[in-house]
Image 1: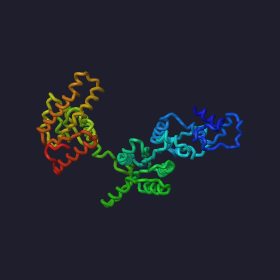
Image 2 (image 1 turned 30 degrees about the vertical axis):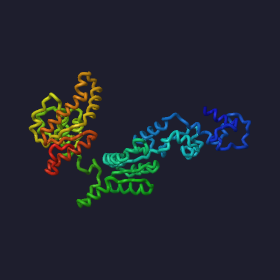
Image 3 (image 1 turned 180 degrees about the vertical axis):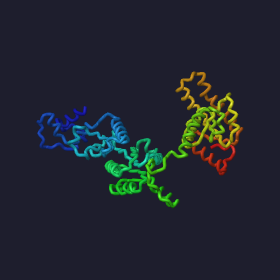
Image 4 (image 1 turned 60 degrees about the horizontal axis):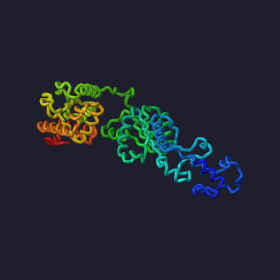
Length: 409
């Protein structure tokens, strides 16, 4: 179909579409040339029909390129926009002609609107593990979910960790300049951080030093100079500190105490979680354990007696978890289906009447123990629920900001 359009332009000049006739053919061009020679004599805009590719290729191309950037390959490519020019014409045309905006045809841009959106890169550079830089960038990107979800502002992130050599640092900064990337760095060595700052200013690269300002502020507050050594450096104290071993012990304890196991050890726990099935007790326990807290979780099931030790421990350790009945039913139905439960078991587990009865049963237990804070987890991420628990836990430990009895959070 496209070839027919090109031939009609050369053989019958009076009938082509108006937009194809915009670039006037050379009046000196002989009309008796063979068809193949006529096609070669057509001005450059005539090749645009060849640029049209099946829908979706532009998106797949961008995804592939984003994966390549994250994995550290193909970093010398300057433009992250989709290159749709055929290979046979790439060497004959200028770089400006390869972009959709310079093709002279608005139809191509309308057909591939995403192709005109360039994914902007963020380089994260660290002389350590890069954990601080990565989590800081991810936290900041969370403020742009409204733009990132619909790919209105696509972003590629790439982490460069263990960069303790100035030459390697300069190579990364040069590449950031080529790609038009932003540089975010956490460099403990003041000289490395200063070199990064100066290089970014010279090459006009937007940059942010995450570690430097807060380190300087703390140094000023304490009246002590920082060591300037990254994590794991030979001259720095080993990371296997008392906190590290306490965290490992907490993880081991929490795993052994999962789902009501070993109730005789509840008095050893820092935090005890109680709630009906599928209220997120296990993942929440694991998250808290990684922060160094020994956590036990107790399931509340109708017809199953709760362990006596749960009512003998310090009630300030116990936290109740509850959830909206409709949300819980949806979660349980998906869970029952994935486990292949029979219809009889499924009706006792995920039907609305049973779900409501179990939540009411748990609510009565919480009411009988008014010192247990009850936390509503519907719509909350694990981190949000953990933040509420830890705030209440530390308030109670320090005997300050005591919450009201039976208040739900």
